[in-house]
Amino acid sequence: MNAEQLHTPCYVIDRDRLEENLKVLRGVMDRTGCRILLAQKAFSCYAVYPLISQYLCGATASGLFEARLCHEEMPGRENHIFSPAFREEDMPEILSICDHIVFNSIRQLELYGKRAKEAGLQVGLRINPQISTQPAEHAIYDPCAKGSRLGVTLDEFRESVLSKLELLDLLDGLHFHTLCEQNSDDLETTLNGFEEQFSEWLPQMKWVNFGGGHHITRADYDIPRLERCINRMSQGYGLMVYLEPGEAIALNAGYLHTQVLEVQHHAGAMDIAIVDTSAACHMPDVLEMPYRPPLRDSGQPGEKAYTYRLGGPTCLSGDIIGEYSFDEPLKEGQTLIFEDMAIYSMVKNNTFNGMPLPSIYLKQGSDYTLIKSFSYADFKVRL
Ligand SMILES: *Cc1c(COP(=O)(O)O)cnc(C)c1O
Image 1 (cartoon, rainbow, N blue to C red):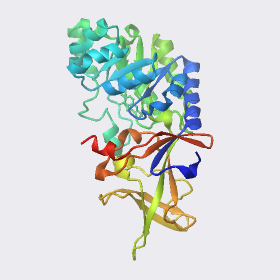
Image 2 (tube, rainbow, N blue to C red; image 1 turned 45 degrees about the vertical axis):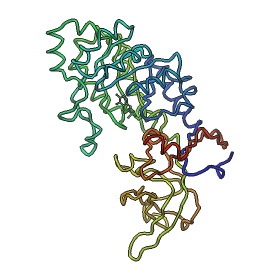
Image 3 (cartoon, rainbow, N blue to C red; image 1 turned 180 degrees about the horizontal axis):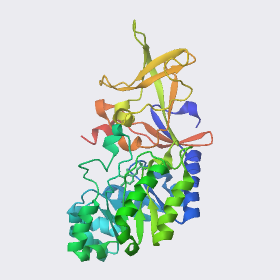
Image 4 (tube, rainbow, N blue to C red; image 1 turned 90 degrees about the horizontal axis):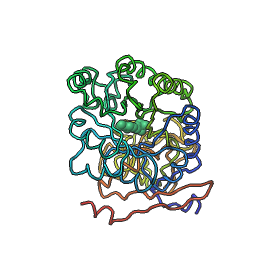
């Protein structure tokens, strides 16, 4: 089908853009020997897992369900898992389908480490290098912030492994994840601190995992610096380096098509367009991060002749996507296309207000195929 036939609201995954990203990531792997995994929490649309598996080494999961998805939809690929705290009841299945498990605390390592090892998994520990590289307003995305529940600090690590040497023997690798939408200069800063703190234990490890948050497929990303960071660990300590980006894999590789339902004029205030997609339901990061999603053929407010505030059809007064300007007045029934809507969108959908879930299409060239559509039943079944 063509673009005019899409039923809004809908997400569109752009297969060609996705593949361009995958080629960039593959290039890093080929030049350095590192391994890159898909962080499924950002993008779990498994219809394109066959394509992703052609380029990457596997996936990482935030829990049992994502691990099961990788097991089912990327068969034969590496299946890593990390959770701040695992549940006993999930362990048998996790140990049967995953090949790498990363624990968040010494206590979790003590609880499950030996079992994981005996089941044949490689065991890692997430450490907290306590180096914040994120802007202060990003505190909810900073695992190094004071009081963080994520990762083991150097002091905690040293104290535990000195008193219980067998813990160290369980470890195949160390993991850190401290970045969010950042460039490789911040990775380098983090790695400098990590190496300074943990170098004495690195020779006995098999791998180090740099986590996610690397915006590798963004135009201004400094890939050579990333590769120097990887080479430092692989050549300096003989370590395999893992990266597990989510965003970078499907960055700018998806859209959210929406239709203008009504245009409102209010005396003394900005014109409003109500669209059939909701920030709260279909792009919650717009409100949480917060950020202003790019919208095709639009400008900043006031930049073009006609400026509107775009809002969703829910009851929430703050269900506002943002303010945009256009060359022509908006009309009822007109389609608007939000860009960069593949990541942290479908995976975060909800049906607040009974809002329908957007359909999902795959775009290849100028052809669109329906991957999935939803109905009233999908709203009802969860309640
Ligand atoms: C969120 C997360 C990722 C992926 O992060 P992106 O910002 O999407 O690249 C990878 N690893 C861990 C442990 C995470 O929490």
